[in-house]
Length: 115
Length: 113
Image (cartoon, rainbow over all chains, first blue to last red; front, top):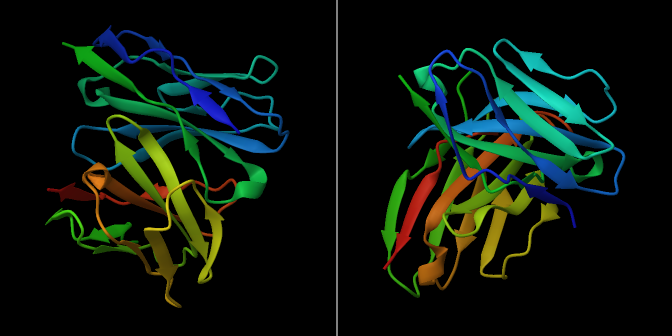
């Protein structure tokens, strides 16, 4: 079974600084997708960034970028120029290509942004 | 486009009762997945429906069931509620699943007393 591990239950960052959230996963599949989701307190889960395993290039979305190390099965999220609105629980998720709507989530990392 | 909607948003039930939760996906989306979120177990996949058929199923007891209608709206039902069923139930939709982004609803918070 696929597993997703987020080893940092909590992280904090100073406003305008950079922070990296870690995620590792275990799979024997070659066709899969990785995601980072953000869940602000009492608010809806939203997608931050998405990576296809077959793409070597790391995905970026404005201030958010990933470091995808396929051989090491590592998928970290870097948030640059952190803003107060980035404070949330961040989840790393894995989805096998053939498993359509089934995602496996890590336990989450709570990010605090200090003004 | 309107986002994923879930009703009701909050629910209080007692042990032994049953409950039905509803999810309306984004217009045009045919895949609907359900997840249970608890502080202890995190986010756990319940099941996924696509074109009215259950396509994937997680490791939950048979008390948890679901269905999808021809308009892609989905319901999940939990019978004989237990205290441990207290959770935030999230549904997520995508056009057809696979590697597509899943868009989540706000969730239904269920409290079982």
